[in-house]
Length: 135
Ligand code: 5GP
Ligand code: ZN
Image 1 (tube, rainbow, N blue to C red):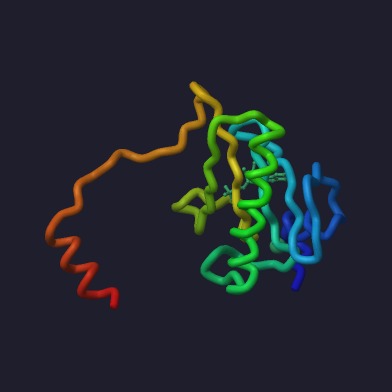
Image 2: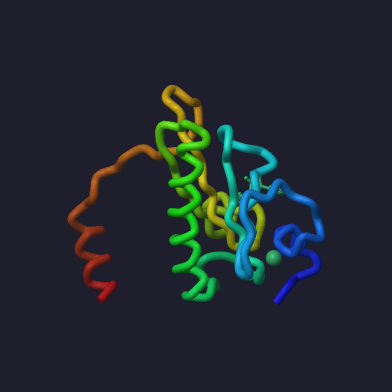
């Protein structure tokens, strides 16, 4: 299932050139064009899925295994100090390309990569509501 109007389908298929770190029958791993830090890379499945809501379960599992392999190798190459895996679903969550992808963002001591959130406090109402609704 390839979507001709999707840039990541075209990159994953090799129709549009990319800086490819790894490729197999299911995935292409590329360097991000606008890296948050040196070595920021993306895992792209070759099939088109809008995001994690739609992603085939088998590919979801394979994505995590591939992420583990890639960051274990990349951390030695890059000599980075840590790693974030980031995966955005829908615009409000920061998704800008609507073809599932996993970000692998190397972290370096004192880098200015702006990931994070303000920590709130879990209220009793929220806790009760959510535990009641999700079984
Ligand atoms: P999202 O915001 O959807 O989670 O992430 C999309 C990512 O894709 C961004 O980090 C952006 O820099 C990257 N990106 C968008 N278009 C291209 C492209 O044509 N080539 C590459 N290598 N990266 C891209
Ligand atoms: Zn696509």
